[in-house]
Length: 168
Image (cartoon, rainbow, N blue to C red; front, side, top):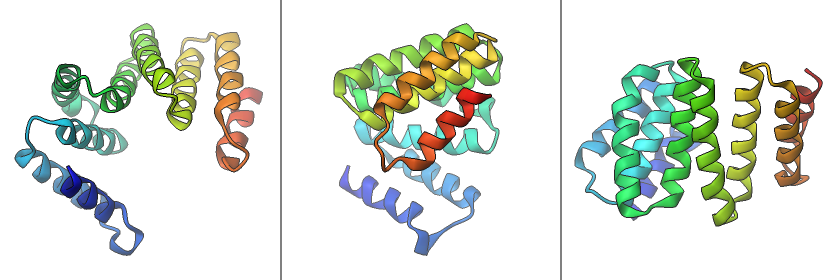
């Protein structure tokens, strides 16, 4: 697992910035050799994130399902919280907003239990986006207000972004 973490930080290190396709290719190569453990769930989440950044949502669905299945089998909540958000992103991309909200709420439940402030904030941000897509503006505003409760003063960019979306 440590090998995977070190490799991951190597990939995102500014002094070794690689084009996104190289990052994705590298992650996919590591995924091929990963065992059936938490590191594989973590790598799957990162591969999906990179694919979604590239707009490759459809390509990632089988991998999301594999990651969720393995994460549930291992009871790896950190990975599951992230994968549930990735599934919610996939559902929004496919305009299945109610399903996206369900996935984001599943992620939020996990993150609240773990007390991971930044991930909780991310869940509220995702929920706000989903409610905006669904034209549920009061609910979107409520999610942004909840998000502010979990942002620290040093999270300046996120605070500004949240206030911007609240004014939208």
